[in-house]
Amino acid sequence: MPVDVYQDDDKFIVEMDVPGIDPDQLELQVERNMLSVTGERPARHGAKVVVCERPHAKFMRQIVLGADLDTDSVSADYENGVLTVTIPMSSKARARRIDIGGGGSRTIEAKSSGATESPEK
Image 1 (cartoon, rainbow, N blue to C red):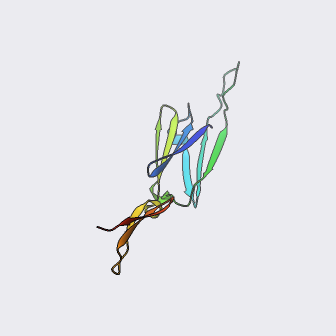
Image 2: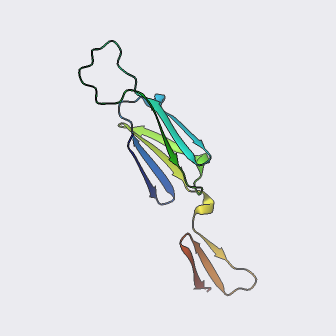
Image 3: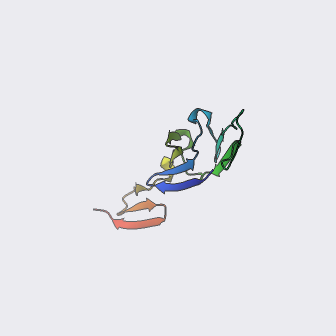
């Protein structure tokens, strides 16, 4: 199934096209750093198939997640055939300001791309 993964501020979003699949038949699991989505589009029984271009089978899609994600707070929504899984970044991975104690005369702002110094007021 086609998947898009993107970062939006402090969360990662996974969108998967699963049209025609009952959301109750989808199963999501997160184990360590792996997101697994399984489901099934059942075959039509008792009908004479004339053309069959959509897969009718079980499927599984696995996506490796970064270590800086909060996998305990994963949420999922299903709308118009699109499964959207939202995974927030862990608080440890977010940029934060760190004050230097002990009479220091500056503050260093911690960022994921490096650190910058700014004079303390």
